[in-house]
Length: 125
Length: 125
Image 1 (cartoon, each protein chain N blue to C red):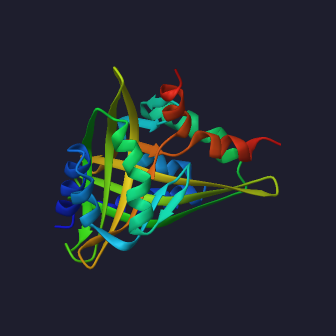
Image 2 (tube, one colour):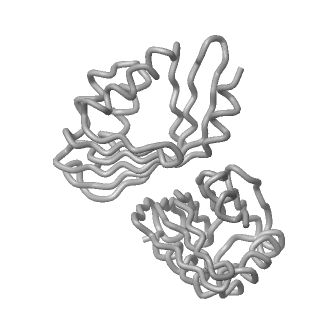
């Protein structure tokens, strides 16, 4: 099922293993944080995640639900998550719903829906 | 597939047919607009939607993707939508990702993820 790739991808993020995560995305990946901005292309994708992973001591993305259609080669996966980040000595928690479109066995689109203010209010000192 | 119930539910909302929509939800429905609040129970559910439907001349919820697991009796459905509302002479548009949990053939949980500021900025005059 196409959900396996997404689960592996999220496990790589949680392990702070950016090389493995980037290996699972398409060259022309579209990475859209809906209330923020869209990143396009593998190099930009890596560059956008790197400082974020560097700043985070621990990452735990709890998947509450994950549903999928299609195949591991061409499919659609959606999940409901609680994305948790340990920044300094504080856990930041963001409720997220994510869409992943799989093409040629790689993540071609990753789009996360969340409330930006919920994130920002926790990031302010 | 469990997606059919959700598609019918959304069609009822678009048709401003609250009776039909309410008939598809469980007595103890949990309706959670993540950045806002959670409504519990059929009566509260109806009461929360009624003024909203009354204020809206047209409703169009475009489903970009919908994926599901389980059966029409017990299942999980997620969709990515663009929820459009005609308020006065203006279309309000909100990108949304929704989770629906089906229990006993009814919608027991409806949880929508979106950016509250994206909604509020369009509602202000």
